Amino acid sequence: MDISTRTIVANGISQQIAEAGTGPLVLLCHGFPESWYSWRHQIRALAEAGYHAVAPDMRGYGGTGKPHDIEQYTLLHLVGDMVGVVNALGYDDAAIVGHDWGATVAWHAALLRPDVFRAIAALSVPFRPRSAAPPTSVMPRTEAAMFYQLYFQEPGVAEREYERDVRTAIVNTMIGFSGDGEPGNPLYDAGMVPKIGRLFPAATLSILPTWLTQQYVDLAVSEFTRDGFRGALNWYRNVDRNWSLLSPWASAKIIVPATYIVGDRDLLYRFPGMSQLISNLKQHVPELRGTVILKGCGHWTQQEKSEEVNSALLLFLKKDYRAGEHSK
Image 1: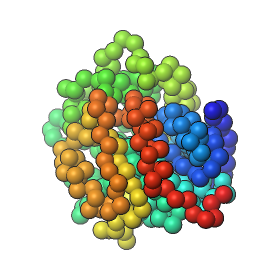
Image 2 (image 1 turned 90 degrees about the vertical axis):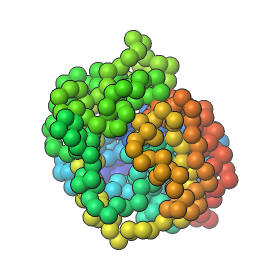
Image 3 (image 1 turned 180 degrees about the vertical axis):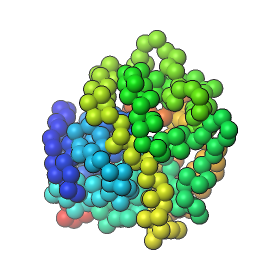
Image 4 (image 1 turned 45 degrees about the vertical axis):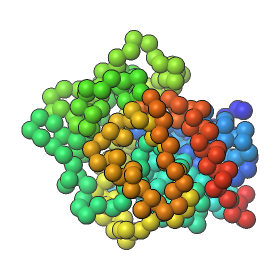
């Protein structure tokens, strides 16, 4: 099944999408620091199963528009982009799947527009209900280290480290946070970045693991070398703004069918308090159909365990995604 790419205009910006197949629409939202290409295995599997699989380069990435202003990367903009894609493709509704930051977008798309997004599958990141205080005010910091999202807040700081050697940054990040990486790095274990030291963990393998292809690395290096990391990092710089904007939906529940998939070696799965959040997920997502935990899998779920993720997604969609009568 061939995957084609094209550019559309949605929510007022140009968005590059990769797609294959015909049928009910399934949107695939990537995270940091990735692109549509991270979904290549799922695009083909979904298309072969009778879906129109569409994976955009998200705002700030790849072939999609990259507004300069930080304020243009809130969750309302990002969810609006996905609504815009649905409309631009001529559909009334879709299922939405997300990984990492894309999972946060997918959860909130289902929360804010259940009339459009009729089913949601999230990889790595569970739904996190709105906290009582702005997120950065409760992120951990010590004299020697700070939570990685705090490190990302000041424009230019993380960009300089990532852009100093883009290939090394991409390879070390992908391997270091995968199931092939080795625990022991503070960022891997608790999300903490030493004030003196490298942001991303050192790669421990001399050759790429089978799931991480040279083509993937070359594409990522090309795109981030060309455009830099500012757009991608701007997502993190809106966490407190998102908290303010989403106040009308405090305590709201996600009411569409949902599933959650995570690797048991994912750094997020190991974060303090995450096990309790995952075990209580159904309180906030009452139509949660289940949690799938992939053994030996790190953070890059849909690439490290592509066949297992494909099987879980197809089973969920077959049972719980009912496209509306007026879908394309």
